[in-house]
Length: 144
Image 1 (cartoon, rainbow, N blue to C red):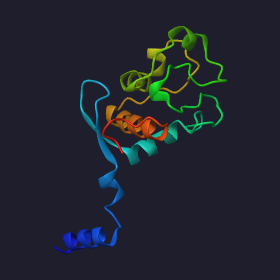
Image 2 (cartoon, rainbow, N blue to C red; image 1 turned 90 degrees about the vertical axis):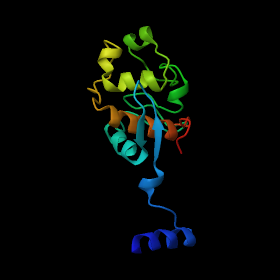
Image 3 (cartoon, rainbow, N blue to C red; image 1 turned 60 degrees about the vertical axis):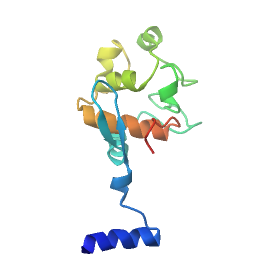
């Protein structure tokens, strides 16, 4: 009863619900429908941030800037020197292709310069991709 009163008081005061309750959305990167946790996705991106920037106009690092990555070809970061493997493969990014790539980059694009081993856990990838889509200007349908 006390917890319920606290939640009602928070709502009346405009404090909102805890971030965890608001930071999830349903996505289907492959065959399975998953609930992506955007805060966990933000934390998963810590593995990527040494090589990638996210915001429009930010510079490329070791890897390309990811602005609008969900709606562009893999060669879409202007000014970035892509490997021959990427130039040849030239995948079109979507939720499904990014999911496969993040799982094991070298398997999807043999010969890539990207040394990241990948993220095996489908739930962690779903969290990352939902957050990445939002942060790069192409939020997924149904995700905040």
